[in-house]
Image 1 (cartoon, rainbow, N blue to C red):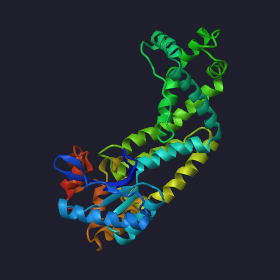
Image 2 (cartoon, rainbow, N blue to C red):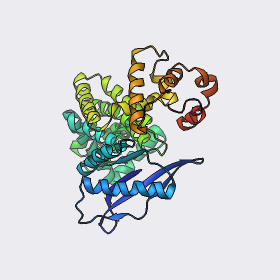
Image 3 (tube, helix red, strand yellow):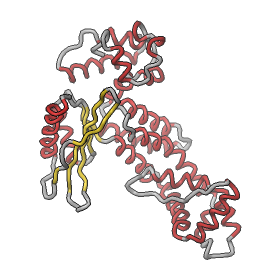
Length: 362
């Protein structure tokens, strides 16, 4: 279940709930009743908790289903509500919106790396000029057709949609040769190539900075797309954030790398339970093969098994009896987990439906 507060066309502040139910057709989304008008309401953590509890009861009654996962925004009221609800309902996972968190990581890139700010300002100068001058845009498109046999539009980026930064920068990079030729071809005409635009197009430091920004943002944009998918799972989010971490860690500029890794770790510690994500990734058959050793005697297995056992107790309020044995067999691809039986089951839901009869606790 997910919920968020927003303003409607009448500028009234409303609160809406959406529930995702899995059935034989895949996943389906249902709106839970009408949006609640919260204009003038003391919208704090306690209020959000009460409304959420009511909606959880509705799901139980109307859909004969138990909600196991709830996500919402990351601001103060929602953050407090998640904490209160987690204490009251430990069998449900409460997390912030991961797509929004990844969007904020992209914002961190622009915020915490000073030289990127100047590069983005220069990039914005380029895109703004061609978006406001139809004459210049037409002449640039003619050069692009000559170079690439296609038109590459210049797009600006939106402050609240930070992944649009990557698209804007990448479009400029993709059109680099055409842009520089445009600058040379029309350099004598200040109406087509103003002085500040000419300086930017001839600035090697700008092009290096734009290339670096695109390299930093590329895994973030991929993660953003994954987080916004209807089929996204907790394991997918964990994998996406891992890719971001690896991308930041491998940056050649070690100062930039350290700054971005530190901000990512800070955000992770504030919003994400490591045990939930690690176990979710372990229990995704594709990710398990890619990220975890097959030998159950390796050190990491003990940590994963302990977390899995603790989460089982939290979710089902009882001790597991066969989980450890099942987890060891799953790690080593033994029995029903043999790859010759499971290789065609790429969807984790199908995979565990298949294995549930013998390994229900896992």
